[in-house]
Length: 371
Image (spheres, one colour):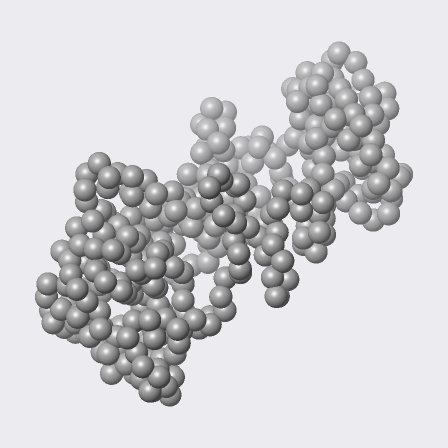
């Protein structure tokens, strides 16, 4: 049993794997059906258990279990390979019209790709992001080291749930939120879509060259084998860069026109690479900071965890397994995270005890492989 999270003391989230014994699932659903506020517990129990694919496909079934009333459940999350009657939104909203039901999938609940499986790279590709990655004149590549698609879908889910909660204060009813990771990424592509439409290009390759061709922009290696990122895009920053590095061949009023610099992107890049390879990173970091040029070193993960800036902002909290990341936006009246997320199953026994299982019943669930 995996505890996905706690919304409030009246609600817990549990994960029941498809390999669990049917009678164990029956016991938990019986408990749910007997909760105060369920007007027809027997019908709910039958509706869920009548769907045999829940028990046979090996997929996860996420059930929101209230301690008191079903009306206390604010959000119901479902992770199934296919829709299941009895725990779908249309069935559950009959029990609680105020329920907000969020479904987060790769391609959404509708459309030709709704049933297609996928991972982050697939969603990035479908949204057009991979096609704009790599060298300006090179093939598409996947070079992102973070699960951008998964994070985009998660963030849009949170935003949608918060919006639905506010809307419910006005309407008095909940709704089904159909969140698609691919849709979220297409939304994040809006700036690039705008460039493509405004440029009048008939081919994606031309748009890619326009988007990725930026003078004085990129990653550069220093003499000690370390790297820095540079982004002297706007003319004031370009002027400071030329002064800091003494790039006399690129000085003058003509080079202060961005269109001229674009035409000389390759020459500027070659000069910068040659320049930065002549001194160690510490020299360049001090010089660029002194001239207020947009740059950053390129730390690895271990260096990020000890970075003085992030430490000063209280972004990390010490944990038994090492530091973990706090919510990145300080909020008045909201306490920071006191402990890291639990390990899978860490709180299973205490949660089961809270909802009425005694020690012998919990032991039997463990022997049956449910917990």
